[in-house]
Amino acid sequence: RRRAAALFPADSAHLLMPSLSAGSNALSSAKDEVEAYDALAARYNEDEIYTSIGPVLLAVNPYAPVAACDQRCLAELAALNAGGAAVSDLPAHIFRVALEAYDGLVDGPQAILVSGESGAGKTETTKLALSSLVRLAASAAMSSAAAAAAGIIAGRVLEAGLLLEAFGNARTVRNSNSSRFGKWQTLHFSASGRVAGCSIAHFLLETSRVSSHPAGERNYHIFYQLLGGASAKQRAAWRLKPQAEAHAYARWTPAEPPLKQQRGAMAKEATPQAEAYVGGKDDAAGWVETCSRLTALGFSDAQREAAFTVLAAVLALGDVSFKEGGRGRGGSDAAAPAEPAAADGAASLLGVRSSALVLALTTRRVVAGGEAVTVHLDTAAAAAARDDLARRVYSALWSHVLGRVNEALGGGGGEARTIGLLDVFGFE
Image 1: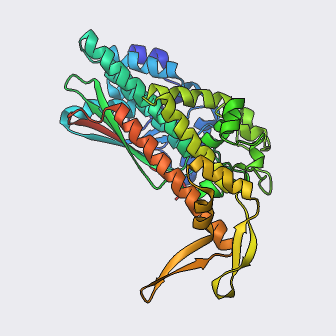
Image 2 (image 1 turned 135 degrees about the horizontal axis):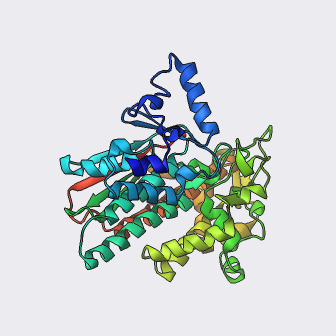
């Protein structure tokens, strides 16, 4: 308790929790919602983003780096726990939630629910919870060989989350790293408490973003990383254009009126240049990190190249436009590629004949009265078919990447001790 007091003095807002002493009733003494919000606002202005309400932890997104979210803070809290500090002695923090779940494994499977609207900080909170659980598991008694094996799995768990951010997160008007999917992560622990494996299940990936994103927002990070980091040789092989703006699916349009971030160094109007930075890194740096994570999670060079070729194919599909090419059956306007070279490029990246791709995008087969009839699509219908194909291709790539990630994480290894983390998307 003395060590906890040294780290978080008694007059510190860290201790403003209902479960602690007389000075900890910031919310329990509130008479109504207004007073509760005022108390949270006062803590927020002091960079105190965490407040406990019984078993629930409230986190208010600071939109800027704060000490409470630093890995050094997690290390200090882990040291307090290792030194014998009780859970009730620890301040309101995501580490404390993780510790309660970890200690609860002796009673059975545990679960942590991370919920909130878009921009509330769910992605970062989930990462901090995982980091906390990994730290706790690393302190479990085990042999050096077991510790090394557990360390590898734990490292992959953290890398996997960051890799999925590249493919499943995007910049929105409210959040520079918004998860556009929900996920359920199950951490499996051995009898000694070490991390034995992990499995990730996803649901409701926002595939509509692949072909269309709102003004002031971006497509998935991975597209911009590809466009910002690929070498000259790769750009030529993948038919990438010099600027992201030249690809229809990566095009950025300003919001009306211009939106500003709430706080910190990012408090400026969004511009195409500002959009190239996510989490303090530009897209080229993100590309290097994503390539490294793919390798760390077991993707061979050939498998990485194949995945990036599919991404380039999705971008190329978006650049296929249509014009009226004549009259179809029944007198309808028939669509044809406005630029045949664009269709040829997309087909090449997809590994199909250009004629087959054009046929698939500009016609559909209808069976009527036992007879198959080919219907020619107009330009609007052909564009819709193109966008649908692009979304389906990206969804298939996403499922493939997630499948390979789960293989690298080793599943559960037969261990029944589990902690599940449900990161509920905020765009519903």
